[in-house]
Length: 64
Image (cartoon, rainbow, N blue to C red):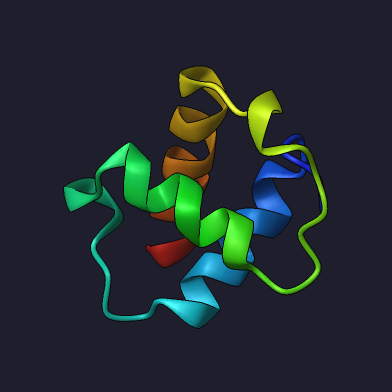
């Protein structure tokens, strides 16, 4: 997965962090959790706030 695979990342986070409320998440935590996902293979420096916001929103949508 790459940073641009927002939907795939969100699905993985829903599965791996079922007890986490994505609305109460700090972007520093979110970034670290994405980097730790199995199958994630992208440059950490390519991450930015816009990408993290998109991942967070997709996670919220998936969790509903």
